[in-house]
Image (cartoon, rainbow, N blue to C red):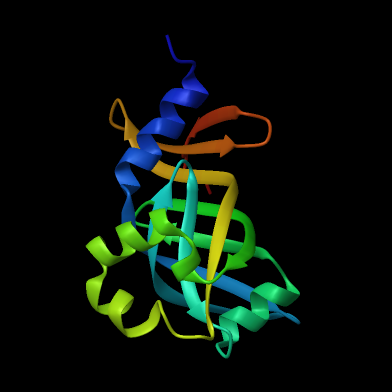
Length: 153
């Protein structure tokens, strides 16, 4: 039987699926920016591609801490450049399948780079037994916490 952490981890990644458009937030020198990106999700890691000339590339090279948002899920993690997209067969196969126009337009360009986000923290807002809940997963510690959201002023 799965423990609560593993159960919630699995639920969250099933909710996101094997591909999704997520908002990627980066920051550098106290300047934050965000944009929607096309992601491929493989074994709990999230992959995206971008051009070396883009602001997000410079942000990540200077500060690898990023945040992602999908529906009611927020993820925080460490982002790392891992090469060119065309050097990664599994990524290319799924990216071409799910985002064919982006694959054709960008994946083979010489300045295009592939990044992986390895989550360290996940938060999801949900309703459990009709009560608003904040669920938190701490991935390094493999811990799950939930709390009822009380709007007590």
